[in-house]
Length: 517
Image (cartoon, rainbow, N blue to C red; front, side):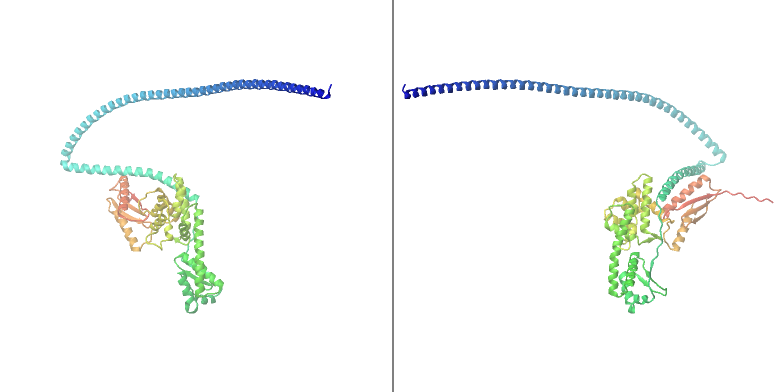
């Protein structure tokens, strides 16, 4: 064959075979794709069925859970309803019992009213019988005594008044004795407990301070040429410098203890420095005054810390520090204030009040003494105005204003502070007065007692703190003596003005004397 034809036939056969192979491969791929698609569809349908079953199971579980919770809530509600029913049954039983008791009480009241009505009827009958007997006795009395009705009435009223006085005196004596025993016991316990819990010592201070000098030549340097140094020093400090023949000592005198302390420290500095002239004196005094101001603030803060009182204004703390250099009746006022604070706190706690507030009232009750030279009026009013200005409470202000019993007491802390102040002062409480005024007050006190019927003698003793009254045993009885004692005490309260208290003691004594011959 021709090679060309052979090649052509071969190429054609090869092309047909290739085409058939391609078709066969396409058929195989198509068949494989169809199988895969069927498998994917089957898997998808299987997953859908599985998901549907899972969803149905979850829905059933949720339904079961919801049903269980609902049943639990219903059970709790049923339990609550049962509990309420039981409570209502109890209340109903209680009401029934109360109604039954009320009926019983009503029956008892009705019986009591009936008995009371019977007793009233019997009492009325007896009253009528008594009135008849009294009329009969009155007529017999008129007949026997020869007195008319008015005279008999006056004599009877006099006898009744005397009996009433005796009975009143007996009641007063009995109740006073009972009340005094109770009050004295409680007051004694509270005061003793408070004073045992706090005790402090006090030292008396004078109005002079001494400054030691190395030699007597220093006195001349302190005086200066023609006295210019000592004049400059006294002008800058406001005190008097006394230089006498006493060896090794210079005396600084002044009633203001703060100024005196400034002068003492300044003089010590000048002596140690050796340079003493007017300009140096002014510089040293100014420096010392600044140091004292800081020292006063420190002393006030230490006092507040010791008394456990917080939240004080800086001005109040400064005034507390000034009290360290103030004395009253030989007591240091700052130590006295701290002692009063602790005593007031102890007393308040003993009777169930706020001990912290009582301590604050006690610490600040004499704060006016630190500024009484700067304002007019007594230290209670000055202190109250200062405390009110610096936003202290009404209890603290009133305690400062009324701790000397000069006004009506509105807070119990005022009474507590006054008692603590008296305990701390340890003195009878008499105020300074002239001899004429003192004698006049004693005479007025004795005259009040002598003005009562039955009083024979009266004596004012213990600087007017006690009044001893002697009554006639023939004109009075033991019971009427008690009434006279109370009336004299009331008259003293109404007619006299005095510090503290006056104890009135009435003595009745019956004496019989016979002579043996």
